[in-house]
Length: 386
Image 1 (cartoon, rainbow, N blue to C red):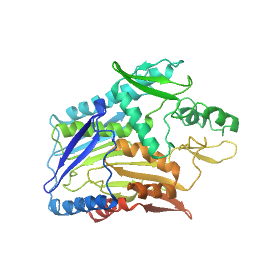
Image 2 (cartoon, rainbow, N blue to C red):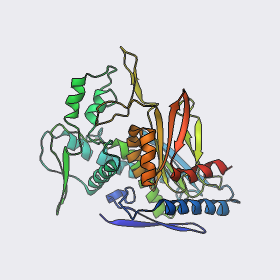
Image 3 (spheres, rainbow, N blue to C red):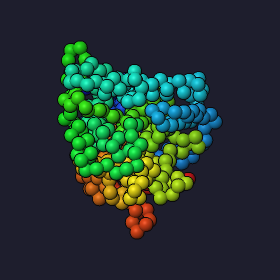
Image 4 (cartoon, one colour):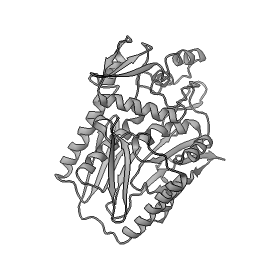
């Protein structure tokens, strides 16, 4: 696949980031790039903090701000452009929804006209022609899954439905061991394949019962896609939020660095547990505290985060995992996997791979945070900003 270099220019720093070009969502995925050492990452973060302190100390609020919000992919989105968007709200909404519609036309499992919906409806193993867009999304998602030991599995749909979290099942009964093991027979990243031909990519099932679901990355892809379109127009101050996936750059309406709150998972009021500055990066959070079901007979509560290897929802005290990385495709792809890991393993993985990770666990009935070294600069910035 090709690479695109995006040049992020500020008053005192030019940062070039190599990202995956994936069809119509160029810049949304993450290709393997030359690895940065922990020291290099720390220096980059410190430079960003120094830049923010110097460049934005006397920043003034923007006189014009364009804001839009709406629904997409079964959730909500909001976009804020300090300095205003050419054409105003209507033009910004049209740009965003055009990108969302493009992505949904490839990955939706609800729209009968979408590529993935049609593929899932097949009851054979014949090669099925798909767009480069869908091919790139699947391949990048699988790449990210491999990074977290395949605990993110886009074939996990049968288990999701079985536990009552999918579109085909709303049961509040704990499935039997036999039902779980039977569902697992049709789950695995080896149950499908993509072949590239001169006429385009072909997707085929190795198991006719397999169903692919890319909802775990849809929000992140959408946020990245809109951000890229804004960049193409020379707009460098924005926040694009699609559900829990946030892609931001530059300054907020008050003329300061964007600050995003990590939610306190123990309060129904959606209070902020910790404020952070993403510093022109992507950020998303996976949580096990909002989406769950209670068994009608036993009263036991089960999380929607299901480990595809065991077939069961997670059963540990980790309530949420927040990830900051180059783009929200990446953060959205791995945050649920890290939640399945649990805080201990997620943080060890983050330190090993130099990834910015923030976890919240329930300890003695109270939320407790831990985070990797790479996350520290984002927290310090969030604490210092007025």
